[in-house]
Length: 221
Image (cartoon, rainbow, N blue to C red; front, side):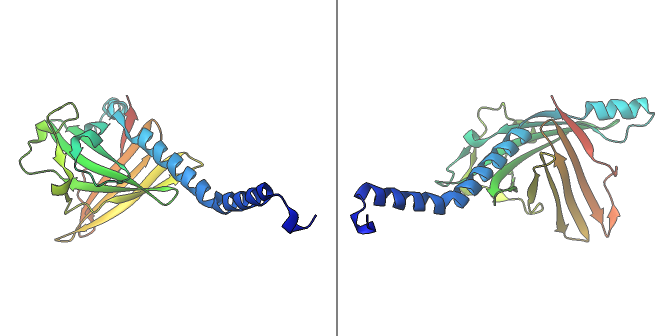
């Protein structure tokens, strides 16, 4: 039978097969991108603290790191007027630090995480509106809301890109930010499903100002 005698459904099947085959690489990359991004979302949300690290340091005779707590929640419902079709998700991070002889230090942050390529995630930090008090920027504050149209990116932290390691099933970043006056802030993070290592390295003219030289070791609670 010649090709011109082939039933029309065979020709349609051949066309459909060719179309699907041509799309397979793209579909595969998109599926991987979705898996990596959803894994990141599950890793980054939750409650974390470094109580085990601090307890071990106290037993050893010297506490090096502050007692630290992260409360990370999806904050999409608190951000109004997001652009249509915007990918990614917002996280409201409540960070608390308690050092001996010092009052509790609250550091709330609003972050946007977006997929980048098939195995990376980009972090964008936003400046909190000036009228908000730190103690009011909490995930359990039902009246807290942000207007995306008025949000401004952080002028000091230029963001970060996290790389996925499929062997370790971990994400990591080392993101330096040059600041005025010879200052540099470098965010160094490495995390898996239940552990988060964070080093916020602040330097001036190459000299470390951060009072410790090893990361804070958080565990999921």
